[in-house]
Image (cartoon, rainbow, N blue to C red; front, side, top):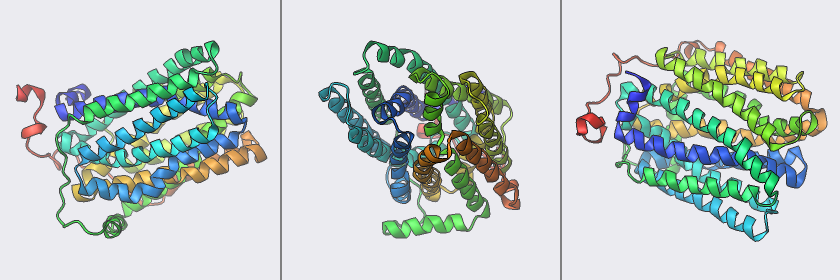
Length: 431
């Protein structure tokens, strides 16, 4: 079956609509937000602190968001989380309007933390829901389609950001940021509209719910029993710690080596996401089941490209290297998504997903804050070298583990999936 056919499963299609709406809003907002923080403060370190506040909720609430996803209707969890994030963005829009476009930095920082708190609860519930919305043997197709389409949407959003938002910046430096904030806030409510139309997604629990802390311990106990998951989480920690200072590096390079305009930041990001689409399309035909080697190749490839950026002083050169990152990155991310969904029982799926998100996003506040400080003290080229070779080291961690190297997602014959009944029926069958 083609990847597109996965959209004939109505519940997954609704989730895809929700993802697309929020992804477009985030894409239009992301560059404007980073640019605004740097414009108001003039410090790469403040960009790092803002990014750290975006990542911090995943670390603080990660263990408990997984318990929530494993004990309550995942549809309701996504609804509440989306409404909360959207409301936070709209509140920031009101503040920006009241201050005539000169948004207080404190308001941006607080909103970054609060809006991402909602996302910290949304993502574990969302990722744990996918195998319940399609047959288990179609989980790989669902993840590939999501990765390809969402990266396309994000790329389109970056292109729009480079034109529309940047155009608004030329017309009104006071209110270009307000437009980005309001679009992002509205996108959350559009996403909530589609999530509300999903069926109930009640977790399949073999054991009775315990106290939250007991359930958290049970989730980590399950992970400790599997060496493949332990090594995977270590790889994720190392790689995400090294990749965390990317945006402080972007804004510093834009100020130091490039033209200093928000368009340059948008095109650098755009150059990363477009190649991920082609890799995703390739994975639709060649379904990479080797999760371990995918991480090893993906993170090492990104590391070599980032280290090379320390020698490049042009936007075109950074775009080319960023494009190479986009080509290899999906080899690490897409097989990992499917591996965790298919090989982890539904009872623990939310907690394993939250552990992954908690460690990947939770380590970033340290990397972001430290990265911004190191850029100002050691210089941008030195920090890029540290980041690049650190990601290569993440790949080496994986190579050293036999269980990780040989981690393979079971094929269709081994995981035939549940019978298609009720809301699992494709559109054609429903008709």
